[in-house]
Amino acid sequence: MIPPTASKSPLPHRKTESRDRSPAPTMDPRAPSPVHQLIVPQKYIETRTPSPKDKIDTTEHNCKYHSHHLDYKYTPPPVKGPCGACGQYIVGSLVTALDQMWHPECFTCTNCDTILKPHKYVVEDDKPYCKDCHLRLFGPPCNVCKKPTQSNRYNLLNRIWHPECFCCVECGKRLTPDNFVERLGSPYCMEDYHRLFSPKCCVCHLPIKDKAINALGKMWHPQCFKCTHCGIPLEERNFYEKNGLPYCEKDYMDLFHPKCYGCKKPITDGRQMIAMGHPWHPECFRCTVCVKPLTPETFKEYQGKPYCEKDYHNLFSPKCAGCTKPITDVSFNY
Ligand SMILES: [Zn+2]
Ligand SMILES: [Zn+2]
Ligand SMILES: [Zn+2]
Ligand SMILES: [Zn+2]
Ligand SMILES: [Zn+2]
Ligand SMILES: [Zn+2]
Ligand SMILES: [Zn+2]
Ligand SMILES: [Zn+2]
Image 1 (cartoon, rainbow, N blue to C red):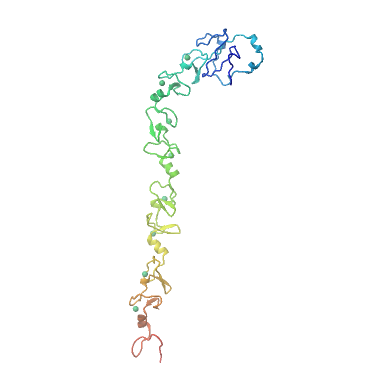
Image 2: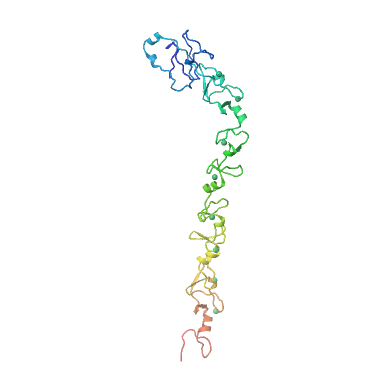
């Protein structure tokens, strides 16, 4: 918006009410110069707050000969107020703040009387203060409610808090400096922190607050990481897995390894021998009489037990009526 200049419109017009723009000099000698203390008839005094609608209507000045200026009658300059500090009416620059109008030089810090600039002051109890005085008198502002913290404040997470404003961002419960958990700069109560961010146990589905066991691609409470068969607690690095489930060594061997037909213990190292339709530890496959080690090719079976050839014939082959030795190949029955 271009304000009318003195040369274009030599008569007093309504000035803009922006406090930053001082009134253009009045060329008309009949017009009074603006002063603070002006005796003005009450009907000319505007007491309303200036609004953006108070623009200068420039259309009337686009006419070619300014003919309407010929029947000019004096109109006093606009007067605003009263000033929120001195109570007198305002002509020219003014400050609008705290729902009042002020002479710029009257709008000062309540504490130190420094003239306050727009946006460079803080309001407390409906009174304006410079930022320094406000900080000194009322303390730094709480980062939550923005109100001053006086002397009672927490300085936590690089911010200032009223004790009553230091609350869990999830449930709103009040927190204390020694009982909260931080996550991405926000405070949480323990329950919400663990509920939201802690790993969940794959057995009981509750949050794991302390030590977690990471096994079989899942997270476990130590007390939930147990042998699937007998239930004894397992260690993270000492368990056996079958079909995604943990087992203690004994149960794993018992349940999932073949058992030796001789000693009845599981065969865990893969060195198993099949003989007589059963698995054996190689060292367990021995002659029932002389305990000499046997191989699947060199043994004789009698009633489910292995024997070396010599003992088998001694025990079970017919004996020679002449020499009493066992007859091991062709026998003659005369
Ligand atoms: Zn004043
Ligand atoms: Zn001050
Ligand atoms: Zn607060
Ligand atoms: Zn909470
Ligand atoms: Zn659990
Ligand atoms: Zn077990
Ligand atoms: Zn064995
Ligand atoms: Zn033998």
